Image (cartoon, rainbow, N blue to C red):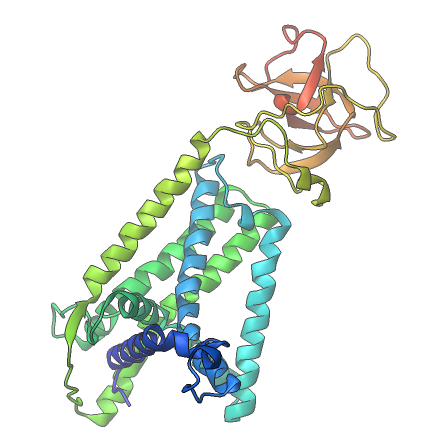
Length: 389
């Protein structure tokens, strides 16, 4: 049993690396059809299943890191008011990963309590200890796929004799990832307060807490190390993998992904909304200024349409539904939803004539909101509409 968190981290890396190497070498023998291809394969279907699932289970920490990466990416786009959005992290779809995450936590704690017969606080602490090693497992998965021979993880060298500082230094990457997640979540919610950014903040704080647990447990392991009084020397065999170098490759890959996602805004926008939009919940489609909503120029009067207004400039919604917002920008707080054929009075406009937003009166309400001009057909001259700062 390792004496401290650094030893536990190296042990988990070795286990993961070995598991991926076995999976990479014998994956064909674990397929459901393996017995038909090789009659000498005596593994039962259940054995092949559990060996395969056990090997693939290591990749859960890789996907957990990718999930955290996309959460941070969505938060950054929200903070910068970028028109580019990570679509799975918007609107009601954001609830799906939260539900799966909640169920996964409950299942994890239930298994620990019932199999090990431990109290709930110990189960939660054990769960955090398990997830705090996610970074080491991620590096082990990557190295297991690219390396052909045994390697061991070499953590950063200590620059001081302080054991506490050493305990923090060996978890510097976990600490950095955790702080980035937490800060991104808090800033996203602070810059644009609504239920979506609140949910995003909660998910990011949770993801960050998993990585922040690493330096916490590393410091707590000093008590065990002091109680035992001596270090156990473990002979490390194979080729060393520098954590710093491996982490830089991960960061470089992340930067490439961010650059690739940033290029999305330069792709041509579709002329019409896709056909599946009609199956989505009303209001779930957010129309950004870069989209050209050339959808059925003729407005159809519906049962909810307001009476025609005379003597003033009016705007008629020409898309299936349009969000009316608190400010003239695509990611501002949504005030209400207007539907196709609905006519509203325009009382103001924004300064940017190349990207028109109409300041309208909300039907059956005394309030006002901003409606993107590209989703409407304007009746009357816009030269007489005052500019609203």
